[in-house]
Image (cartoon, rainbow, N blue to C red; front, side, top):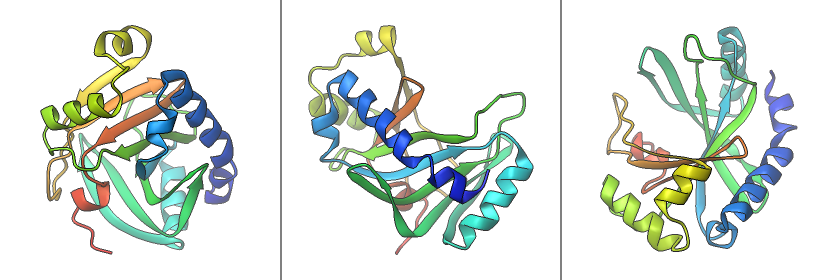
Length: 186
């Protein structure tokens, strides 16, 4: 999968994201939030290697760390990627997990809950203040809802995250842009 081919799917992914946010009833609120990065999943390691080389020509790797036995890279694009009403310069490119099947393409976006305390409790509080009509029980029963505190060597600050999966679109929320988490200064 080439960078050009992945970019060609961005509008379709953006539409699925918008529909998923509308289904949750949070599209208007999310339109005011920043997407700090988007994640692309690639099934084969050799294709990840090729895409990594291409992305280095349109941006820079600001983080490349081993997480649970596989490398996950964060690339800061020189030119922003357009996702409907949003723009982002961050792309997450993980190597595939062993024994997992992936479809090549965009997997999730991460929104920044600006002003949230950078703890799991603070992110949860900010999430439900931003989206007062949502509740955990409904999200868990009708969608995938998760709370995670991912940490990678080199992270400058914690990264507590709430994740949702709606119509096979990952939608995550955290307190700080991934660029700040990994210590990137533009």
